[in-house]
Each structure stands twice: as C-alpha cells, then as structure tokens.
Length: 90
Image (cartoon, rainbow, N blue to C red; front, side):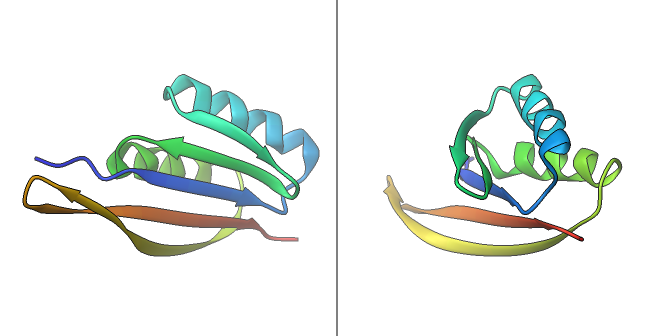
C-alpha cells in the first residue's frame, strides 16, 4: 500500500486559533511551517490529514478545498500529493 503525502494549508484564521491548530498538528507528528497568511502542515499520509481535518472541524468553522498534484512514481505506482486548503469563515 502506497502512502500519499498531504499538505494542509490553513489560512485566514484568528491568531488565537493558530496555536490550537499548531498544537493539534504536533500531536499527530506533522511538520509545520509558518506562512505569511497562516500555516502549512505536512503529513506523510493523507488519511492522517483527513483525521486531523475532521477533529479540527469540531472546534472551528472553515471552508475546505481539495486538489491533487502528481508527485512521481514509486516502483510502478503513481504517487499523488494531496493539498487541502482550509480558509477561516469570517
């Protein structure tokens, strides 16, 4: 089974909620990078990212968009990079 990497881009949320998101991501062993408008969170497997987004939805509201990018081949299988964009509702 091939793990597909995933990026969760968190944008336009209030600064006090950024720390909540950061702590939740650290509990899931994700890599976090600060962006000028929020956070980029890197997961090794898309299923972990989906669980993270599901938990996050219970505590705050945001709009979700999902896209994919070609990430190369591993053996004879295609790897896909999943990108989830979460934008806070104002």
